[in-house]
Image (tube, rainbow, N blue to C red; front, side, top):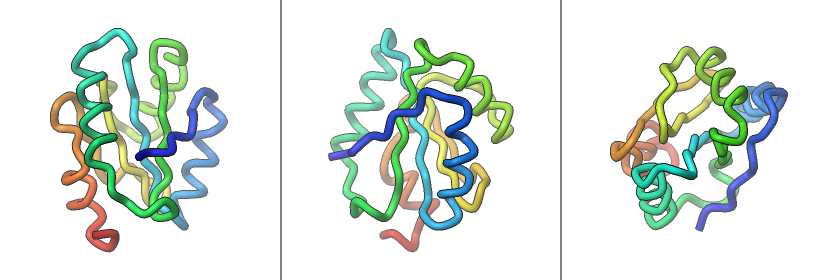
Length: 115
């Protein structure tokens, strides 16, 4: 089970960058109108087995908060995609995946210390 933290303000990106120094943060950009996005979210939630305090998962409804999504692309130098998963550690995006490439195994490869 993922205890999503809602990402709905651009200012939260500063908080995520600061938090990522102590604990990795994940941003999942979800399009509520896209079946691929729903499938990626479902698979991510089904596979999620990280201890609660080991990683902070943020959920962005990008249709409702497109400006936040644009700011994420700018801030972390990633091309905007939907759905998209970004792993933020020490203030940097160290891994990103989109569409059906979004899965827990990819996160584990980027965070071997959590496996």
